[in-house]
Length: 453
Image (cartoon, rainbow, N blue to C red; front, side, top):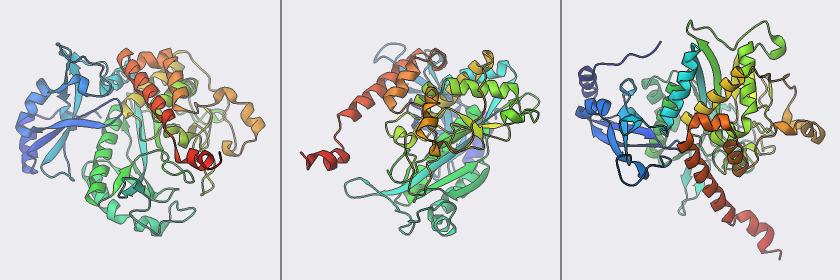
């Protein structure tokens, strides 16, 4: 059921009764970082009608000029997104849609996703998305470097997943965050200690794509706020430690029609893991565009240290290296279960609006071209022989950020989906990041070169 727009005077009155005096008018830049400004609650109506003004060129990824009528970025409030923030008494968040010169701004990440959601709506579909954030908690040392096990120095098990003691010792953070997420309507489902020391995962109820992306932004804001109140650092960094598993941000994807039926599920197709014809085609589109999708789903240099990781201390990698799919198989890029696709390449550094927009565009391309994903694979890909990997070279994912960005730039479907401005800005920013990374001298180079030659 779609949410209804509340009346502005009634909403202001309700928020004032909750002690709210100001709004955090929030949007996302191209990196998926929350940006915005504080606005008095009384100006909510103006935020809806006119929006809050921002200097366009001061925002990563807009490509807007420094002067003239198109230099101003206006964020117009999405009224049904207003929620009081439990970790910031007196403040409520309201999500903004980007506008420039009175028109929806094509490079606003939320507008990018809305365009793809509209394409689904033309078919009578919506994409339900369950997002699973995995994260680490740190403290900073005097030099600003991360200190692991900041919350629990005893969290040192080689295989810490689901361990009661390590999970219970995480309660100083979790006991603050969980009630806040519940108050905010996340529909919390479960919390667990993940496979690395100091790593947790929180699962909450799925929602349609746009609301799921909005909710992830809110989750990140809440988790950062709670961690800072405890002197901790919350981080979605994909691969902080070389010998431990990294953090992903898996997307659970399912199409739903106007009657609420699951479009991807068909119990009469066991050879295709109970995926309907549409589900198979959508999956095939994802696999066909996996290279370019990887750039938007795993958009940092560090992302590829997670994706290219070997076995960790726990004995598992949990990351895909090949664009293949399998039955409840966590070593494949697409894990199929209960008529859903778990897309396992994303990590927490992605912009959820851009990543989901690209996922929709890729899936719809598969439907429109009636692509076939082929047969599912069996077994743990991480244990495959060299010969088995050689047989699937065409399914290899990009090994570096530079390679992924190159695949994205060559993908006409994904480029068209995100738009010219976003593509130009994203490619330029990521090429600069890669160049900057390549110029840096690492500790590994000192260890293996400085003292040998």
